[in-house]
Image (cartoon, rainbow, N blue to C red; front, top):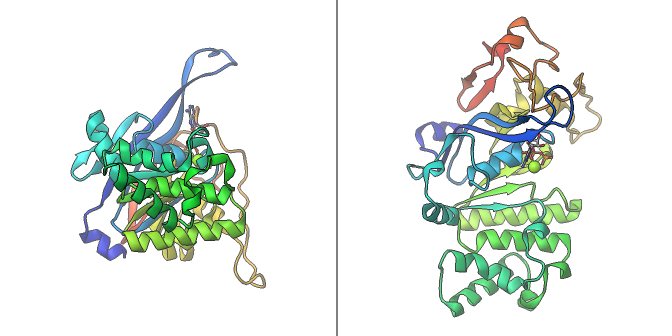
Length: 330
Ligand SMILES: Nc1ncnc2c1ncn2[C@@H]1O[C@H](COP(=O)(O)OP(=O)(O)OP(=O)(O)O)[C@@H](O)[C@H]1O
Ligand SMILES: [Mg+2]
């Protein structure tokens, strides 16, 4: 797949994406002053048609901010996102609406994004109205069609969001994204809030839709096992930085970044008789308000060298499609 990528042009090209949030700090000599949470820092990657790119990393590393900024649900600090030869960050509001029909998002908790006072039929029709798709009769037909496709029933049309289970609500979240016939779906922890048995139902639904609707996914999760199951390629984030990116098999067979190695060492093996070393990282996760200089991982890296404290490592292409930002690979 990675060989194909080198000749195929990306569907979405994320270049040097950076998102800082202004925050006020309530302590110390800088109390009350404006500082910045460096949530996403100079992140670049490409999304190719028909693939699933997984993004993993621990809580707070900037996964959701990356997803939301790509769709401009958050305004970027800097960088570019190229879609159909156009930088999304330069598009006006009308153009953004057209682009958003192609690029949809599914959230972890669909309940918070579903208006509790509106019936499901209306909530599913809403995206069609926003994008000016179909007349009233056609829209109702589309709603009934998508309800069936996501495994719900026509009788659910008049129900309210609170009358559904968590799994059903995620099906509604998925239906709302898919009803406008998108090309790319950014899934932000779509199964993390669900029971394991329900998780697999939603994951299978996502897989089936990917095939039947020719979708491309950016699949965000802290659960590396789920990401492994779904993704063709995986990107690993640490403290707002993308530290490694590789085809799924390559990443699991030969991870290069010490953070990736630690992350993978925590995944249980299918055969519990095979023992593997678990790498426990020392130290606390630094604050994204004041991230370490040089390589952001240097304060916790078992192989830290002098250069790591001073210089930001550059992103290197080790072999086809395997990128890593680490001084050990220089
Ligand atoms: N609106 C905001 N204002 C200020 N800081 C924010 C805001 N949203 C996110 N952050 C901060 O940005 C950093 C990245 O957050 P983000 O939600 O992207 O992480 P995440 O990887 O999705 O975490 P999780 O796995 O818990 O969902 C965190 O330090 C978070 O506190
Ligand atoms: Mg998140």
